[in-house]
Structures are given as structure tokens and as C-alpha cells.
Length: 209
Picture (cartoon, rainbow, N blue to C red):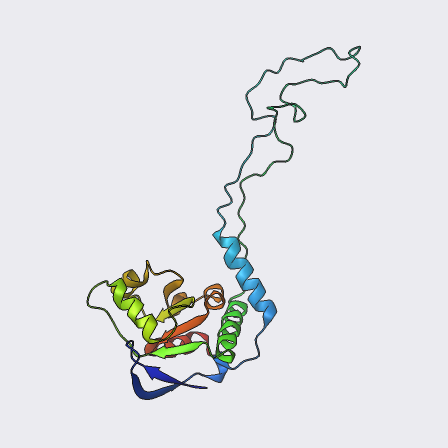
């Protein structure tokens, strides 16, 4: 698959890059995508949820009424979950939600996500660029020039560029990442994938087998 390379101001460079079949032309594996996205979302969870059970709340331990003869159910503690202010039964406890996935499966998931974008023709390739200083206006002008200002975009750079990252940080529905930090969730979450020219080769080196 050949994609035209354009400058960040929208001008055509007259060059094209070839997106490799081993990365962008495979048959997508939906289950691999599901597992990778599930792991990504699980890793975002802090797992710090906690509620107090009956042994942890403050309250009297005195038996609140006699065992028999009251005409009601027996009760031994005001901290019982059946009373207002009592502890919670089987409440949430801190836990780690992360789980392990094999490296090859995660690579397959990323290739599958990129293949979906290639099939939808939602990939643009931009000539390598940089901003002299952080300028949100310049980043917005770039999105307008590429006709993706009204879409959710993901810009992939070969390596971190502080000025570009800061320029796009406050722009709604856009995200900037690097080729080695590219993940399945971000690719699928974006409507349009913007690859810098050098990042295409770097992605190939990371995912091409």
C-alpha cells in the first residue's frame, strides 16, 4: 500500500512511502486486539478502592440487647452490617488489576489495529517536521491543512519532540506519541492516524517479523 507524503502545511512532496504488508496488510486478529485493549484498560485502574468492614469501623463491642425474649432477631454488635453505620459485607479491597500478555500477542494486536486503519484509509504520512517553539496555533494549522481538524487524531513521531508535544497538548481530540510507545488502544481510539515519515520505518522495525 502506497501513501503520499505531504508536508505539515499540506503541500505535496511528490514522494510516496510503502506501508509493508507484514504490518499493515495482515488479516486483523480481533481476539488479540480484545486482550491487548483489556490489559491496557486494566493497567489504568489504580485499584485503591476500599470500604470498611465490621472489624474496621469504630463502634461499641457491647452486646446491644439480650439474646432471647425480645421478639426480634438476636444481635451481638452495633457494627453489624444490618444496622445503620455498620460495616459493609464483602466490601471492595485494594487489588492489582494488571495481568500478563505475551510479547508476540501484543505485537499481533498492534499490527491488527494498524491493518484496520490501513483498510479504512485512515493513515496519513507527514514529512518529518519540528516547531521552533511550542505553538498550539501551528499544530491546529497542521490539522486543518491535513483536513483532520474535526476528527480524533493520533500523531506518531520517531522520537519525542518537546515542542510538538507541548503544541498539541491542549488541542481537543488529539494525541502525540512515539513509535516505540504506540499501543493498540490509542490506534483504535483515533479516527485518523498521522505518521511522520521516519516513524513508518521505525514501526516496521519494531513490528515486522
